[in-house]
View (tube, rainbow, N blue to C red):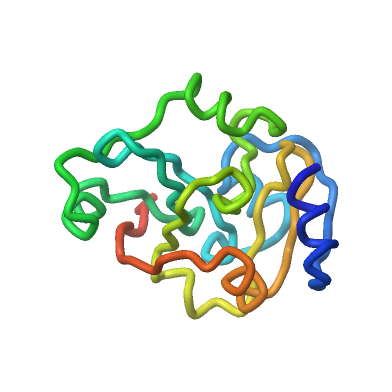
Length: 154
């Protein structure tokens, strides 16, 4: 698993937990008993044909219009599953960790995550979760922080 090897090599503290398979960030938050604001989900987009990883809270949705404006891009669209599968060939589809740097992807983090003290995310499979400090995450990934999401209402 690429992400745990990277974290071990970086000598940061993190915790891996196993749970029944989950297929959305909100489901993972529920089984981990973690508020959705601390659960990060990566969304892969294409901005002017180039792939980017956008990291946002589980309880938020991406605002492609806001992202397009902040990037100064002509077009921003969601990547399709086939494209995502090629980029993250070592992960189960939909369980990608929010480490774009491990996949040569620029990483953008929504500012709603920035003030959190920790981050929880899928570790490349639907049944493993990693929890680590937000400071360590930002130091290792060095994401560009933008405002590109809105809170989902039930």
